[in-house]
Image (cartoon, rainbow, N blue to C red; front, side, top):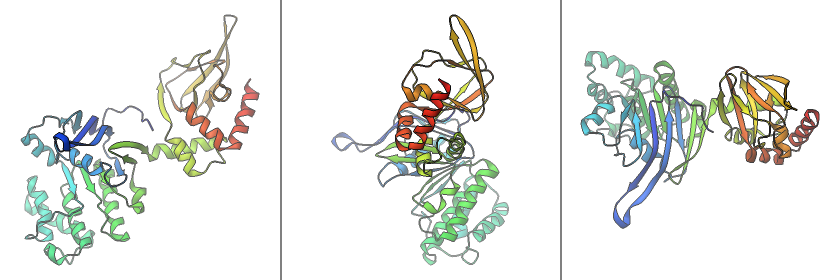
Length: 368
């Protein structure tokens, strides 16, 4: 789904490729990645093994060097970035690795304290915070245990605590709940959600864990090193609810509605801006999310206003259904936002639902 423009992204990626190896062994693993992530968003990266998820995560975390394109985090460009600049930006990022990466010679408490020492937090201040966080994660009786005395799930919770303890502006997590039972996994993602909501921390999680999908704002699916789909779940939910209000989509399953919502484009129009012109080819169906639109027909040199549409109204289905040119113009009478469905997706819906096709033909007859 194409998102409405927003310039406050804390992660901005434009046309990034990435290669492993060199010469004949050189292999491309990321292809033309374009992605913006905003403050406070919880984004899941999903996709099959080898699809580039972890590579992308490590580029965002400065653990790999950007080779081409542009990757900006918190306003800092990573292409050509110096090592001192990378060190400074890492202080604002929390990392949770799938392999834990704990120091065997340090206790759970000491492993977590490394993150607070890195940013210069006084130890008198960090000590109660570390103890409180480890206790919340179910490690009250393991705070001073070294990794060899911890289970895999307990090690993972120490890694989670280390990534969260310094209240990072960005948190990057690679399969953070994979080694956890349902209760522990839920506690971890609840902490993630609280951090995002409380302080605006941006969180990107590589995961295959279907138990925690309710925490995500967006799910980005990667296949073969490319972003195949980027689903803003709140927008999709809103659009699906809008679909239901039209009455045309009642017979479609939630999965079909979600697939359809992923084809929606969001467009904004200024007051007096023309949305479609009479005589244009009918290639899109419009649903008004907010604002007002007047439908005007010109005949014999005279313009006649046929009707005014408001939020939850729609237009454009007649031309789109009959593959004919627009018989009237649509003009925004105030700042207006529309959900726009193109012809290919529209036809797919018509073919899927007999009820939808019948209702549209009825609407076409009434408006002709």
